Image 1 (cartoon, rainbow, N blue to C red):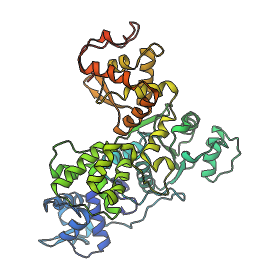
Image 2: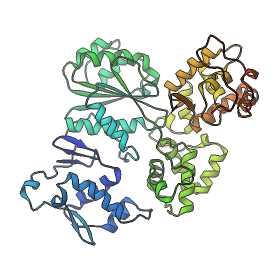
Image 3: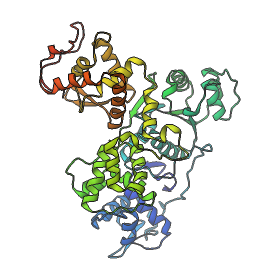
Image 4: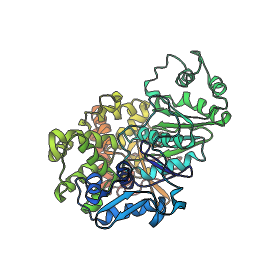
Length: 488
């Protein structure tokens, strides 16, 4: 058995075993104690520092760990009423499966290690991605800006390459200036000779039979260039595994798209226990504490935090920026600030790319990648306050110079580029926007001078007016004409 504290992973016989974040935090305490008794109070303070939880919570996570460490008479010892310790079992056969060292097994190129802040609320996504890497050659993580694609990819890639003892190389395409070919940049990152005009065949030839994982990060600006390269590597280099992070898929043969959404937020009216277990709340509290902010876990405070997390749509970057603000503004001050504009959040890490310094910059990064028609449709659809149907979108956004079929094409493109959220409702779909995207699009709509007309058209849906009072969907379109009634 191997326990990697750096990669936050447990492996049995070389195979990863996935446990929740709380269980791993308890395991880390036991490992670092080196055989010393870890009291229940110590565990409570470390794992739930500002939350009141029942003792049974510890027992649930200890039970999970015990299954991996030899069962009832294995490595995890209980001292009744006191706590737990990690110690060799009395049965020699069980001792053979003792935990190994705590360092990663594989190598990683400088700068490729995951961030030290833990991956919070992504246990299922990490497990899914681990499983995909066992059978796929090219995996693209797709999601909106600020959703944490890079963090997830780095954490999982580092753990996976450590287990399989292969090299990990990360190439951040956000900083690629295009003064050489993309292939030349990849060869340079691999430490291989390259000319400024290198092509896909040069990369394929240079990689050869090497076992390597390439993490091509922030690819949305370069999907056209990257598509040919990734397809060539996936087809020709059996030892290479590719992970791409992007706001839209590459759309090449052999690609497996994995969509990364915001963290779960507590529904309105959730109780205290449900609130503190939500991924968005857990991340918000963790980042606030990292900034030195002491947050009381009373019901009123938790309810206010839950409201903030819903306002921020569970978007990790927004949660991180919000957590920075409460050190100066407090919970109520942050809520008031968000009432003015959710786009006002700023104060990202000094070392982060400029697009991650503010929430507005993150959305602008995506907006600039759209063509003019997509921008127009995005802004018009922002007047829907809630999820809307496809036929309502076509009827609302179409006009003399922009037909329903063009709107349909744009809607598909916006969904692919992670600017529309797609919801399954039976056999049909609904569409919505993250609050931060909608706020930005409404600003742009106001600048265009169309806001009054579009809001009036949207109001006619809510009032149940007949569809024929709106711009009709052409009969040639495959989309149904809007029926009388609300958009949802």
